[in-house]
Length: 119
Image 1 (cartoon, rainbow, N blue to C red):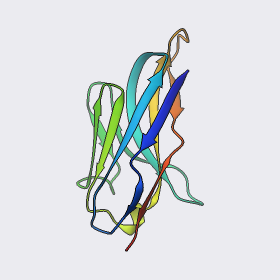
Image 2: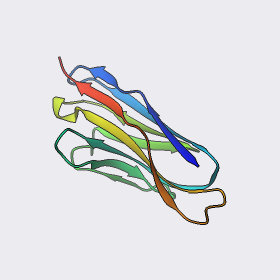
Image 3: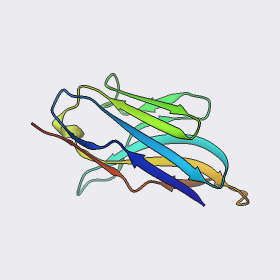
């Protein structure tokens, strides 16, 4: 089994910064890409940023120039700067990994961490 845990959410004022962390743990045979998604009530979960195995990254248009995704081993970080009220959402970490003995690549999600941008 693969476990995904996010941390670092909270309340921040507009224009402020916040860093989220995501750690993958458990019986991991191989870990491929890791990414961050967010969701607000009534809307679909949307991509924020993703870092692929080779280090290449994808960002949503709203995240470009303000957010930076990075990864060190089994931990992914999302550095968020110049936050806006519309960034308020539950942020989820997604991990593409193969559990030991599974023989296949699966997608694993964390429980999410709330980010609220408000004065």
